[in-house]
Figure 1 (cartoon, chains in turn yellow, blue):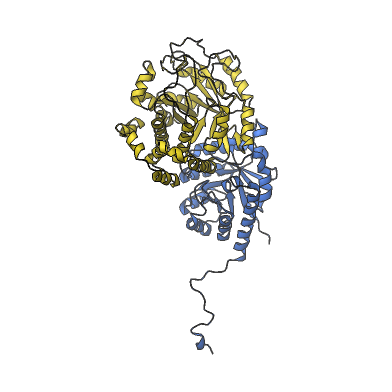
Figure 2 (tube, chains in turn brown, yellow; figure 1 turned 120 degrees about the vertical axis):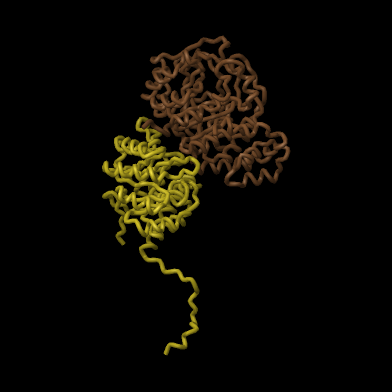
Length: 366
Length: 256
C-alpha cells in the first residue's frame, strides 16, 4: 500500500479532540517508552507536551548520541537552475516572479564544484526548479558526471520523477533524494499550488517511494512549516518517514523541518512556527524514530542552529547559497534568504567547541 | 603466560578490538587506542577521506595498529565486495570486517549476503571477519567460505545492552573452530569480561567507549576487563554448584 493510501486513515481524524484529551500522565508515559506508536508521536506534538520539552530533550539527546555518536554530517546545496513552471504561491522561484532565470553551463558547474570542494565537503545536494524543458533528466545527469569528480555523494532535490528516471540517475551516480511534500493536508496543498505539474499531490507524495524502489540510498522528506497547522504537518512528515523506513528498511530515512523564510515575491508565513515549536517537533520526532536523520538547513539562524546540535539534529548544511551560480557570482537571485552565513570552517569550529565531530564524508560511490 | 591470538597470519596480543565511529573529536582516537591497548582497529571505508588529511579518520589510527576496514553501508554482498576492494586499493591492507545491513531500524546484519561476500573476498586473499547474528549453521558456512574469524553480535549495534545472545554465542564458541569475536552490544567492561570468561577470542567495542563520559578512561577499563576475563578463562573457572555443600554432611557417619 502506498503512503497516499496509508494517510487516508487520518482523513476524518479529529486532531483537536485528540489534543484535548492528552493528559500529563499520558505524556509522561510516552516519554518513558522505548518504542512509540503513531498516537504516542502525536501526543508529544500536542500543545500540552510543551511543558515537557526538557524531559523530551534529555531523552532525545541520549538517543541521538547512542545511535549516531557526537557527530554532525555536513553537506551543502548547489542550485543548478531556477527555471520553473509552477505557481507555488509561497516560492521565490515561481513562474510569474520576475527574476533572472539561469541554468549553469557545464563549465559553471565545474567552477562552483571546485569552490565547494575546496571547503572539504564531500556531500552535495543539487537543486533545480521544475522545468522538464530547461532542466531535463539528461541535464541533471550531465551535471552529475562533472560533480562525481569532486564529491563522493550526490543527492538531488528536483521535481518528482518516474521510477525509471530515478533509476537512470542512480546509475549515473546519484545516491540520495530530498523531496518536500511542502503541505501534507491535501486541501491546503491544492490551494497553495494553483497550477503547474506540482498540483499533482499524489505524484509528489509517492515520489520518495519511487526513488527508493529505484535504488536510492537516502531519502529526506519534509513539510514547509508556516503554510498550515504545523502540528499535523509534523505528524504526517513523521508518518511518512516511518512508512518509508518500514517499507524500505535498507534506505536511510531522514526528515527536514524547514521553516518559511522571507523570499522573492514577499509571501509571509500564514502560521507562526516559533523556535519552541520547532524544538518540540525535532524532539518528538527523535523519540518516535530514534535512528531517523534530522536535517537543519541554513534557513535557521546561527545561534539557534548551535543549540539544536544537542537536541537530535544529525545533519547540517554549511557554507550555503540559494542562488544559481551564487558562489562564483554573488549578484545572483536567491530562492530564499539564508540566516546562517558561516563558512564550512566556522561551522566545524562551532561543532568542535560543543564536543561534536563534523563529518565531511559518510559515503562514496562504489 | 604466552597467550597469542592468531588471525590471518598476524599475532595479536590485545583481545580488545576497537571501533572508531562516534568519537568526538577524532583526535581523541590515538589516545583511546593507547589507553585501551588495542591493536586491531576498525574503520568504515565510507568515512575514509584520503583527500582531506585533517579530517580523515584513517589518519588518526596509530601506524602500529592493524587497520580493519569495515563495509558499513553495504546493502548486499556485491556492495560489500566493492567496498572491500576499494579499501584495499586505498592502502588499508587486506583485512576486512564484512558488515551487510539491510535493516536500518535495528541495524541487524544480513547473514545470507554476508556468507556470499565472505566466499568471494576470501577467495581474493582478504582476511575476512564477518559480522553476523549468532547462528550455528551460518557460522559453519562461514568456516567453509574461508572466514578468518566469526563476529557474532551480543545485542544490536550501539544498544549497550550486553550479551543478550549469550547462549547462541556459547554454542558458536563450543562448535566453531575459528576465533569467535563478540561484536556489538557490549555496554560495560563487566560484559566484555563475561564474554572473555566464556571463551570468546576477543571483543570489539565502539559505542560504549566513544560515548562514555571519559572515553580514554573507559578504554582503559575495557582493556583491563578483557585481560581479566581472558585470564579467568585460561585459569579455568571453578564449577558452579546448584546446592550449597554442607560442612557437616548428613551421611558422614557412613565413613569409617
